[in-house]
Image 1 (tube, chains in turn brown, cyan):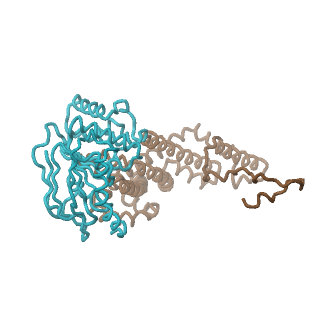
Image 2 (cartoon, one colour):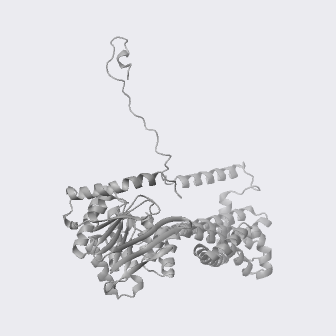
Image 3 (cartoon, rainbow over the protein chains, first blue to last red):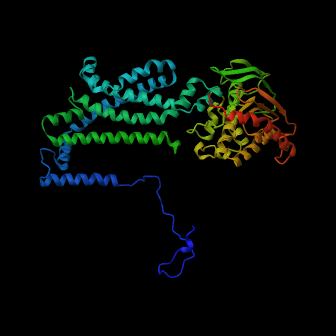
Length: 280
Length: 254
């Protein structure tokens, strides 16, 4: 610096010859987030406590929102009556059949669209046209087609899971590194071998994140489908609770749905860890 | 087995990339092809191995591939093209799986090529754990496992840092000294060309034509960077390429 020699020290006495020094301050690490354990759990617990205290002191009216303890009591009642297994069992069966059939079909069609020019030209506009239709709107139609029993419920879930999987699969296949495919061709691998050993494993991350979305859609549709003509099922339980204005049961039912979502999400995370370990 | 190119021309729709290429890759030699970027070097290599169809002319295999060759024309790619979810041995195994080899023969081939590329200790590693040089050695091992007649190498060292490049070049020279493989080696790096090529083919800028074929008689193992003869050849090649490279640099991408 040019004016260094003119500096005067704090006493105003001697001119200071040394250049002005200061440490370089830290300017940031790129907004990086770090895992904080138990914070999520704590937020959850605090909310529950506030809610419980609010209910007990009467700040929250019982008619508007029952206390968590009341909802838990309703849940225990459900467990003790033996109806929990029936409701959850019925729901799980619909969910499993609908989700796996929908995902499997979606995988097949998505692969076809990803690999064949004709399938792409013919089917991808169709998929774009049908995907945004809310499948709940089609439920009455499905009831006419497949009957009011299990058929229409499974079909709704199947349909809901099918489209996200199709789109995720062919999107994943589109972004597979073409040099890997060319490598397969250069070593004389058959078309089927290239699909099975190169294309699908490379598209798997996209396919699994598609499944994460379609699993949530499946749960949403499950409840909607069970609100029409179902004796058992979590959706039916919630609907009945709503009709009887027994909000404690309603909250218990919703909590079961939330748990179901968490479990499915956890399962997919496990699948990702098992199949995509090579990414880390 | 030799590979012969006759009157090869190639267009991408109405863009001419290669014009009337005539070339022979004789058995047991490394033919380096150099040229400014965008001159059609990589296209030429894809045409040589049948990954693309020439608009005109043809590529001919002269003679029989060696006994036990599963894939006579075999590529080594610039960016390795390894499957990230497969271990080193499984990446090699990928190209053997469809040939109905006995379990013992497959294992023999895998351990043989991994020994030859000094990768035996890394059989179970996945590509992500390996350095760039090691990844390319896995790719070379994979190529050797099918016992190729001609190795088609597309800038195999370009994705590596300069020290690794030197090391791998020495590896390639060792390998050739031991087993005289046949290869077409595409590069834009003149130093690689004069170290590895028995013949250096200079392509012009687009549309690529063969400007010059330079024979280098010095045995591969004896080539030193300090050798004035090597330096002179490299200088000559650069003089040939400079003008082409400068003009090519000013062209817009098609």
